[in-house]
Image (cartoon, rainbow, N blue to C red):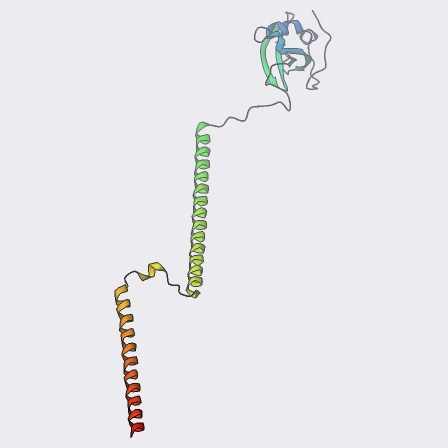
Length: 206
């Protein structure tokens, strides 16, 4: 079965064999040997190769490969029937591609460098926290000094606990001694007064 020739997918001006361009049935049969028919979309043009072969393209419906195309390269020798050279899934411009492969040694070196950087950042953060805690402790000491200064301005108040170590009996005896001295003074003053009164009586009788 020969299909109507389609424009070249890459816009090349290379001449292509019409029999190769129309070999869609052959290309689809080759594709179905490697992938389910549900993953194959309609024809999406062709690419005329420099060696005279033609790469027929079909839209891809395989999940995870946006912008990719099923590609079947066909060729023919002399007057022979077209034959399949290669079947593959190839990306179009702007297709989602895997990142460029990097050797394991380079990836390991990058990983170690990143880990060392994280360790330095963690150490710097811990040092900053320690400095902040030191500042907070200094501020707390200043506040304690201020509280002590304020307390020193307050008048001394005698509390019950302040009497610990004081001999209450000595305080009582000292009080008794003072009372006895005051009584002796009063008695002496009374005797002096009585003597004076007796002298006055004697003078009057004379």
